[in-house]
Length: 170
Image (spheres, helix red, strand yellow):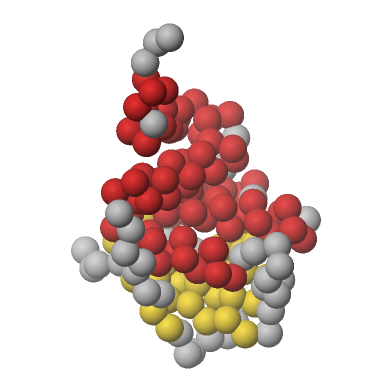
């Protein structure tokens, strides 16, 4: 499997994000940085397209970051962002997790941007990385009841790791 990459192009109030290869939590800081830089309430981005057509694998952290993208578009513009995906395995994963409820999922787009830039990985310490993973999994839980049940124990574990007092009885 190819190492994952996060590529992007921003123009005309639109950001196009392409996730390629094995997209694991080890590269998620670059994805999170794009979200924080471009998808803010004061930002100018009005449309988001995420291309998964070259992705072979997506871990739950990056799925959670996708959920954050969806939440931004729905909260800010009351509409769905677009996911581009033709990989049957990834499509099954997205459907199983309920992504069709929060994204428009299409097989292709007519003219994807040519000038893509690689998102820089941001150096995070262990606590910041844990916070990123916790927030991503909370976003997955917020999507639907099935995800809430699936990821509850993962979120509780991250919470205990980040705040050991949460695991202690009074």
